[in-house]
Length: 134
Image (cartoon, rainbow, N blue to C red; front, side, top):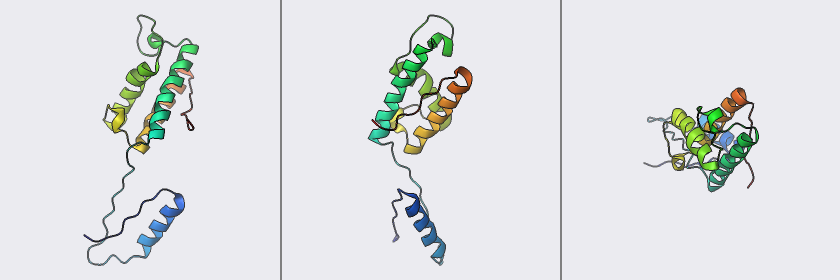
């Protein structure tokens, strides 16, 4: 199958592709379009784990140990690993149906973060920005 391949990483490139498709005759077979956002980047991975640590620190500083956020019982302070296991992964599973953070696509990181941040903000007043520069 002959065709063209476009790698889009900016809004102007997207606009150019849309214009290209708009001006291209359909012919006898039409078009086949495949969208792929790709695996999360190493930078996203680093930011993700930094977020876990920042959120753990903020929850602990507010006195919101795991007992307060998850379930009553023994007071257990948060760590980056417990944030990942007990907060991030259940939200990720609910949103994308996958438990492993290694399987996250670039756009899925944002979706999981937004859902978790919204929940923690509404329920506990906790808002930790996702790290953008590491």
